Amino acid sequence: MNPTNLKYSKTHEWAKVDGNIVTLGITDHAQESLGDVVFVELPEEGVTVSAGEAYGTVESVKAVSDIVAAVTGKVLEFNQTVLDAPDTLNSDPYGEGWLIKVEVDDLKALDDLLSAAEYEALLEEGN
Image (cartoon, rainbow, N blue to C red; front, side, top):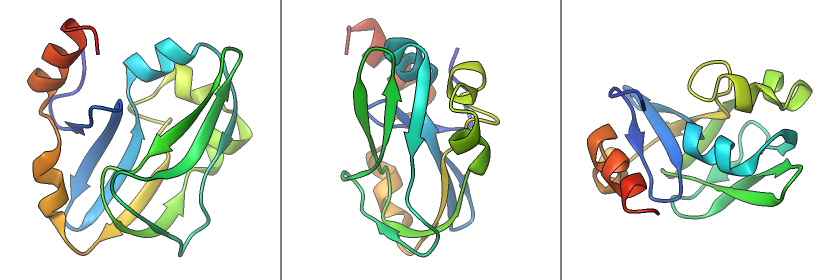
């Protein structure tokens, strides 16, 4: 079950909002589809990411996939734990497996994201 306090994208990323700071990660469905994650590439602090555009990659035993930003903003922090131990994405995608924290100027982009129930419905449709 996906946490109800998060917002979700159709590209299987999640966003946790705390004021104008948004923590981003990939969903349990995404990590399950990828299989064992072996490498993660994330942007440095101070880099600007743009909603709908790739900001990093996740490499698994199956494939390399882009990670798409749910919001536009400046990267405040990246998760060194995930870089050092990529399998953290498999074991705890909603906790220790977060990817980046972004300072967002315009939170309206979050309106385009899905609730947990809407995301569950998307998965049930096979997307």
